[in-house]
Image 1 (cartoon, rainbow, N blue to C red):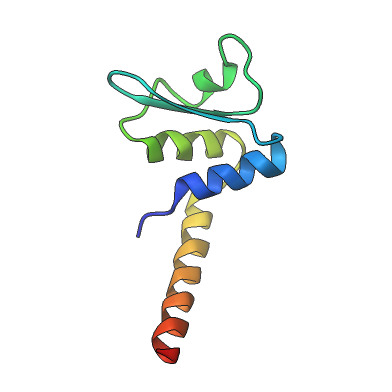
Image 2: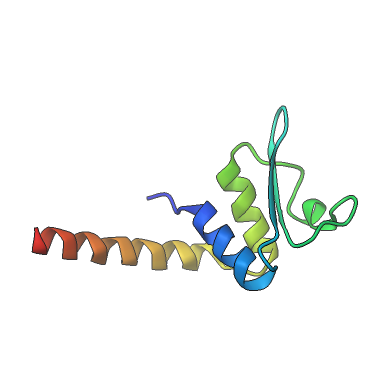
Length: 91
């Protein structure tokens, strides 16, 4: 089950960086970074050389920010499982 990384990124940007979040698509890769940008953004280097998907780039940026994405995945799956159970039970 894939996490909606963009939703996590938007939440984190709003809560911790006054809404600042950049997601960039280059010819061969993606990069993501939070906060107002230096030139060049130092956090891009910390998060790696670029990622094959937008989700991978966002996940790397969230990990640089200190998020434990394995724990977030577990919480997300539990939430979806409970949501599906409630939807199916009521429907």
